[in-house]
Length: 142
Image (cartoon, rainbow, N blue to C red; front, side):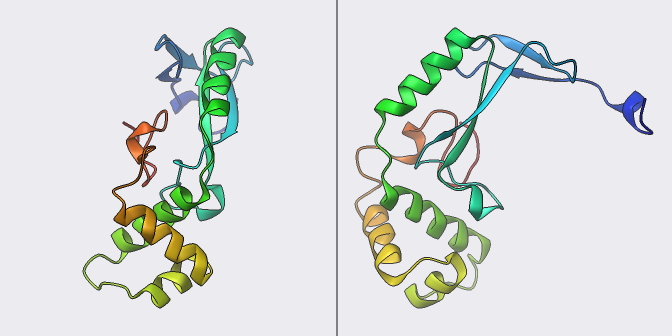
């Protein structure tokens, strides 16, 4: 046992497909985890993880259901870039940011930042951040 292991209790979570409660332990059995492409997923603090969603399932059948649902959902780069912009604006909300400053803060090229802004101005289009399974443009859970 490691130095802090006796203080660590297993966390409870739910299957992203059926909602069944899962106990996450280090014993190797139980919950299945996968990372799937999802343009509505923007990580709160790690931009390199944008466009990737961690999903949790209680069985291979439920994992298949989740993955199939996400495969049918189009990956829209403009949506992911909009999420990067939203995150940058939220981090610096009191200062405001010009498009050029947003490009520097987000790492987006000018055309990507413009496409992301168009996505935002359209009201998030048909696949808004709440439409993605399990989260929103800022990485928070629904």
